[in-house]
Length: 318
Image (cartoon, rainbow, N blue to C red; front, top):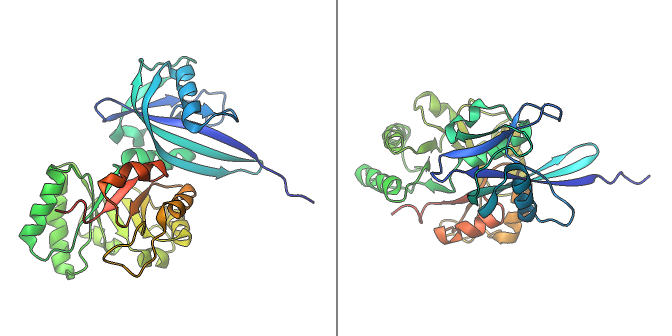
């Protein structure tokens, strides 16, 4: 007997960002549909002949009375149901004309990014909420033994480059030195509105109240459950599909995926290139930062193939 061919449904949704970059538009689902009364990002089903962006332009005009002027891919999420396969194709809209309102009678609301956690969304929207809350650049600190020089470079990245997501990676330091650097880095990041994740054993959060933990791929594969509270950010380094699946099982909020290109630090590791990277990201169901030889010139290309953005040491650490 032939296996049932599942119906494929392509849904486009938009994270519409305010001009100041601090708010996002959300809409309440009608009470007579699935997940009625919950909030969502506006959008809808596409016709078979429509592209993601083309269909989204139509949906936003019909639902909100606005015209998209500038948008970028944000994240794509696949869901398997017994009778259908749904692709949720999410775009970040930075420019539009018109004043959005509920043309179909639905409630719409501008919400500060930090307040999104206070609104109930369908579970399938969780990766979108993560992606909206994350910047497009992930700074990884370089090995630097001189503490004064380290802090000087970190402050330069926070002030001049406006880094807002930082991973403290310092393999050369012993435990006491790492904890001291973590405390000093956390104070500086808080001063400039940046999040700090520690590349260390998860238990270190009991001693330094940073924003989260970044797991090495080795730590990632040893764990059986999420090692930190839901209120903290959990990230991980991944290099293949198996590690991406494990990150999903642990409930990682985002990952890095590498290496895109050959790097001086790991010249023996074959690069995956953009094609393989895109294939892996397509099924990741979480925000993914491209890592490995990345520079700011690669940011738009990375977004175009599904990445949240780029992660780098050398390009952000001056």
